[in-house]
Image (tube, rainbow, N blue to C red):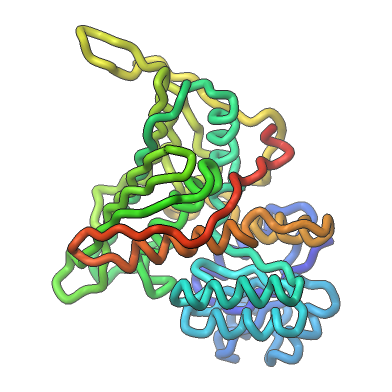
Length: 357
């Protein structure tokens, strides 16, 4: 049985607990939080031991438990740095640090120490994400022309969602993470990004962005994000002969569809008939929906544990995690005047999961 220790017992930790409940060979061995009262309340609610100090966390990690860093963003990078410095692997929530310089420092330290470090989002490992990757490898939509990603969540100003934009302290980073992670995993490194952001609520933090990504592969992708709505979390990949659609980033089991493109009365349209794209074997376990969220967040830590056992770089770590962070911070660092950034990092297209070949 693979054991994990949760560090941080906030809202997101509750989502992780629900995910580990469906995993066949993983369990939460203990939880720690800097707030003792919150830690004990979480432990009582979920029936797991509470670790009341960092010494106990390190002891658990040294005994083989994987540490999941779910701390609030201001404390997140410091904890990861301490664990890596002690030679212990870490799974971190997204983003790993408050800025790209912080992420690069963690990446470089992990490489220097030879320690595995990986991070959410887990969207590239999901059944839906892997089904989309399988469709792209099979070229069933022909040569890909453009990818269009929408992330409009319909949040009310000042309200918390079930997986809301206020959990990390940066609504845009939270919102763009799922689609951006999948685009980089499937299409490889981004050459440059042109983006603009602004706050749609007066006096608020930026909650809208429109970004155009130019990939080294030649692909162009457009990513738009708003905290206003109406709710739409859809990714469309347009090819010469078909359109692939993944309807929702927050549902691991959502069906991916192909619609053939055709010419009708001088216009190119998508066929009204759609066919499902499926993976070839049993995927990861699924989590029953809770509110709008139906994501198994445990598949990332599980992949990290498997990577450590196989002595390889985790799919959601290494150069991929560094490059994804650079692209994300380039987008969220934009202002109302559109600007272009050229990426300084790179990564490979992500290897598919064995059950999605």
